[in-house]
Amino acid sequence: MNHFDGLAKTRNAQLRLMRSGLVTLVLVVFTMLACRTASGQTPESANIGGVSLSVGGGVSGYYIQYGQLKNLGFTGFVDGDTTRRLGFETEGRWLEYHSSADVHVETYLGGLRYHLNMNRWQPYVKGLCGLGRFNFPYNYADGRYFVIAPGGGVDYRLNRRWSVRVDGEYQYWPQFTFGAMSSGGLSVGARYYIFNNYPGSAAR
Image (tube, rainbow, N blue to C red; front, top):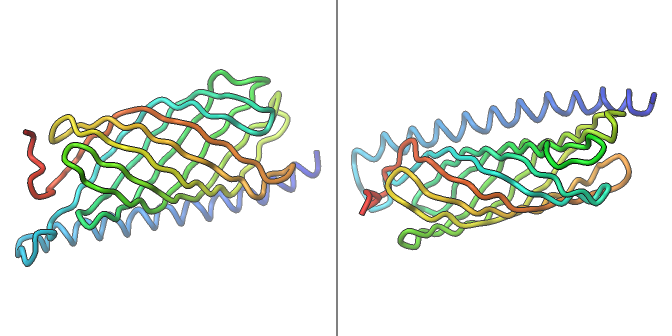
């Protein structure tokens, strides 16, 4: 138990650091988006002003290597995109259901995404990292770990405000207590555009 107590103190410090980093990164992205929107008043090129901010969520099913579990849960995300194909994503995922022995997993990640705009389709790839929280069997211990998560998916635009999304993600936990661990799965959900001034983005 002492091992887990020491581990918990270290992970709590990492949690505070990661949360601060994610908050700072989100603020930087929002500032960049605001600046690009303001500069869009003088259209020097077709790309100026082409930014969007969206939020979304969905249901997730993930395989977890530890115990070979298959948990279900929910995912929420915030995306900031530009017509130059680069964007930013933050996401939270809570795998709380269909668990065994009360094992559940949470991840809080952020990073870059690269997308293509193909009429109503928007395929993308992403590279995220951040915090993973793992609740061990029967609530014996709770650990916090660094997580690296490449992934990708596709959005299908329904209208100016809404699209549907299918997202896949592989997660690597290099510092897991019992050795490096991986997990991965799929999420299906919807995306809502808070603002979207892509050229030609009006509903057809």
